[in-house]
Image (cartoon, rainbow over all chains, first blue to last red; front, side):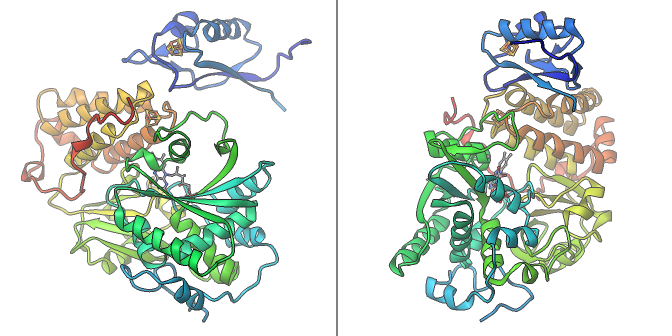
Length: 79
Length: 425
Ligand SMILES: Cc1cc2nc3c(=O)[nH]c(=O)nc-3n(C[C@H](O)[C@H](O)[C@H](O)COP(=O)(O)O)c2cc1C
Ligand code: SF4
Ligand code: SF4
């Protein structure tokens, strides 16, 4: 795999059709996900720097922990 | 014969008496031979008439670059906006213009098949397309293989991914497409999807050239556009207008109330515009300063004796019911907006709180559905909060306007008879 560059940003993305609003992602990545009043995730819209390793780790937890596999990390490298 | 450089272009002929294939061939005889149809389309500056005004050539180029076998052109004649009937008027006047444009698009991207999707709840349009296709076949017209498909009418059924999903799986459900622009596929074959009116314009450009096309309209919005005018009008009308005309001129043509309170522009996912701006030209560049767009070519005229708060609530309630209910923020959020609006409209002690909640919820819902249906509703509600700010305040203070009790409505909303129909679930 090699070493991932730590420049650039990422977004956590949800497929709203798959998401069933179980809310695990909010528990696993509270810094990236809040809940709306119906229990569906409101994901931080702003980009997070890839250098924020704690946030990236949480995002990975959320992706793995989502029972509907509705989450994805989108990396955007800075060129 | 070469068409004159003025109106009507698209609606040349008589609505209700479609030009036959023979008449079409002689009326719209090609007078210009383009070296490359795609370059010609690009030079024309044509933008999509289905609502988003996306450059048609850019979409066609993207599809042409796809290395896909058996590409398909889909003509979107679903006309999901309840008060709109510009697409069906075009089909009842000049169906061959639409088919011809689709054939040109097919030749540009290298497709052998064209599917014309008409709402099955619109039997006239279905009949007009069928008749035109039969005429084409009988005349032995060259070009792609045409097919007519009739999908059930729903608001979101005309959304492009829902329409393609319906063609694939008989379900009018929008799809989640994180990458944009995304390529729609029918059984692995790349799809170019365009609105009926867009296709008709492509035919004009193919036959008369980009320079001719640009003799009407503005630099950014060239050509002519169809618009359905309803509400405070003598009777609803479909007009072909030029984007540089002001709204006032268009209202005048439509025999509309000359002194309205506001206009609803673009459709139920569009926006309200204060009547103070009636001298704005009817093009996206000019309308942008008031947060409005041409959208799907709809103008609903709200008379002075109507209530913007109540009208907005009626539309949002209907739009909430039209959610495909696949995404939480849309399925729960839109009914919540509708309830908030109803509470504000009542002018009860809860109204002030409901108004605050309404503003907050717009921000929560925006951009969180798989398709843009909820975004359209949020946009519509926000425009109402802007244009009818004073009315919202007085409703919230418990002093609703007299008009809200008059029971007089300007914006036609279909009955909720299809409520929770099990199409989706
Ligand atoms: C909720 C929703 C409903 C739509 N309904 C229609 C429709 O009924 N007819 C239509 O032509 N486009 C409709 N559209 C727009 C289409 O998705 C698509 O953008 C358009 O047909 C593309 O054609 P154009 O580039 O020629 O405009 C709708 C979009 C949304 C988000
Ligand atoms: S964990 Fe997955 S299914 Fe649950 S709310 Fe989050 S995204 Fe939705
Ligand atoms: S946003 Fe609404 S209409 Fe669009 S797919 Fe999701 S639930 Fe359906």
